[in-house]
Image (cartoon, rainbow, N blue to C red; front, side):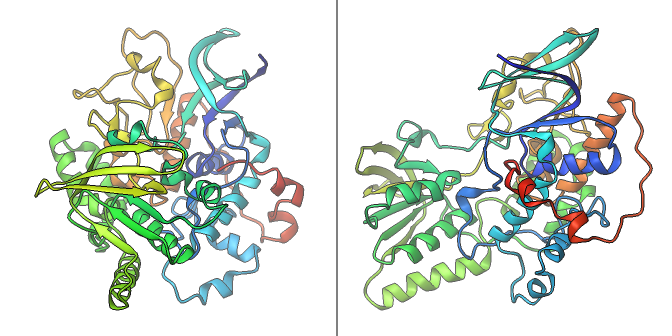
Amino acid sequence: MSTDPKVHDVLGIGFGPANLALAIALEERYPHLSARFLESRDTPEWQPGMLLDGSDIQNHPSRDLVTLRNPRSRYSWLNYLYEQGRLLRHLNLPVEFPLRKEYAGYIRWAAAFFSHQVDPGQRATEVRPVHRDGERVYEVITHTGRRYLGRTLVLAPGRTPYVPQAYQEARGARVFHLTEYLPRLRQLTADGDPRAVAVIGGSQSAVELALDLNRRFPRTRVAVYSRAHSLRLKDTSPFSEEGYFPEFTQYYYNAAPAARRALDRYMQPTNYSSADGDVLKELYLAVYEQELDGDQRVFVHGNHEATEVTATDERVALDFRELHTGARVHDEVDFAVLATGFRNLGPGPHEELYPPLLAPLADRFRTEEDGRLEISLDYSLRPLPDAGELPPLFLNGLCESSHGIGDAGSFSLLSLRAGTLTDALAERLGTTPTAPTAPAAPTAAASTPPPEAAAAALAV
């Protein structure tokens, strides 16, 4: 086993958008602090399994890595477009939101500036506090046997995909979560188009997957199965969208547990189990036109819950129960894509009490009455009085249960959260911010990483 001998001020697990935004904030406010990030992937991609043709992001593009925190940052979405020579042309696009693949390019571009701070291909497998040269630090061990040391630790591995119980034993090459969609699709269709595919779920992603499959394979039967009555329109009211304001985060954090659950129920349609109007209209029109032609190939089945799923080398057998009539439905498909979302922190069947990596340490931190981790407003965990000396540990992008919908898996408050984390880390480390300097006018030489840096950019 090899050990990185340096004790870093900030050690981060994961280098997706959450910790990338943190790295930027640290550079802009506390450049004298040393930071190291470990990323399990080898390539600089964001949501690589869902970069579908024509799909867009669902938030204003200036809710990016930096703008809400520092509108003058060189790492903004608008500066990215400017440096790519696409600013004016992009502003002329007849769309409300950017293409997801272009936003992925923005994340990849920003990550390239920090390749010297990130070790790719290092999946963290163990976290433990240790003594090193008279101070208490965290030691992180990766699957390759490498060891890293940090005075503070920021955990941002992304949320665990949620796989309903009926699909867990069948999960594999032909039953897979949407995060694996594009790679699995290439493997499964290399020898020809599928005859039938099932999409499980009622989210934006489920609708996008059904449309993508229908475009790629016009003769394939595509069946969407949802526990809800049907596919629901996302709540995009500007009043509801104020749930993605920092004021709501503070309000939610101070609310009692029962009040938080009530707020969750209200805010859920703004982000979960619902879809944007444009893709719903496109899907409905596709189904209608197929019916008109007497050749329907896309189907939406609501009120269906899987009771048994069996996968073989060639097919997937699915058995469902209609929730209100009790009718039994059987289907067989080439593969099934699970657009079933991700686990939040909590005690429920769709949740987990703590990130899996913290399992050996979880009983040393305070918990809520229902067993989930107690998380401070600054995203730090609170050690128990008898837990011994524990260095500061923070969660980044995992705190929807304590901080509300703005901490869900979106960019909405990403940059502001990075600012909160950065200041909290600096306070624990006993340092003050470096005086800001006026930004220089951006130039290609000064702002764009050289080709070799871009090639070495790390996973996001």
